[in-house]
Amino acid sequence: MPLPRTTRADVSHHLDALGIVAGDRLAIHSRLLAFGDLEGGAAAIAELLQQRVGKGGSLIVPSYTFDAALPYDPRTRPGEATGALSELIRRLPAARRSRCPIHNHAGIGPAAALLDHSDPGCSLGPESDFDLMYRANFKLLLLGCGFSEACTYLHHMEAMMAVPYRSWLTLERRVVDQTGAARMVPVRYFARTEPDLVTDFEPVRLRLAERGLLASAPCVFGQSHACRLTDLHAVTAEMLAADPYALVKRL
Image (cartoon, rainbow, N blue to C red; front, side, top):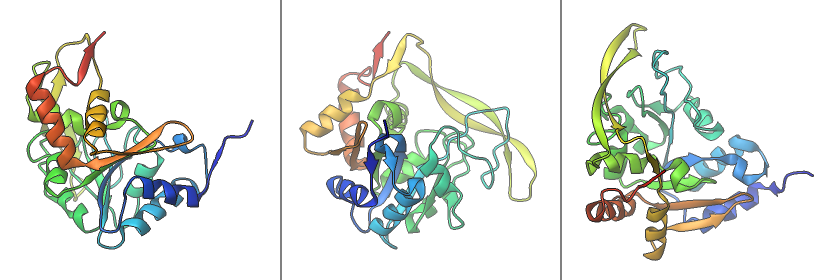
């Protein structure tokens, strides 16, 4: 049986339902399989998003690199399991990429310049990519994916709120600079220390929806979601202040 078809027009209506407008600054996580047989694939989505936000808008996507055995060269190393849309945007000639060898991002548009200014030694927390996107008033767009599978910003919130089940580690990573020389650099990473816990970000989605701070739209398989990072940040901080274990559940 063939997969249900999602046309370019369907995607445009989808973005309407999510409240994506000209000038938006979008932090995007995506799972395009949620759209079934997607007309034009990742290239069509990238084109539609660029058209939607316009020249004044910006798109930033994850290009994370977790394998410590490989050096991090921001110019050439692909992201790991970040999806076809992220990889397409990373490879665009105009794309910028941040220098953190773990939680790095690629982006296009005026506000993507912030990726040049985040602290490459901070994977999460203050002065990381996430912190700068929050301060630059980005929206989060989960395109075809849910909070628990894709909302990395909430791991950043775990760091900002110093949850008790994680602690800071300093990891050494090999980074290639603009001259092609490789050197070891220290990176702060907020690692889980209680192995019997699993991520559960669904309560954040429910709280945002209850307060009218979240737009959602159905895909062929699953849903997409959009909200402002300032709202996500405030709601999550409130939840973690009341219960430091609000983002996890025990096995």
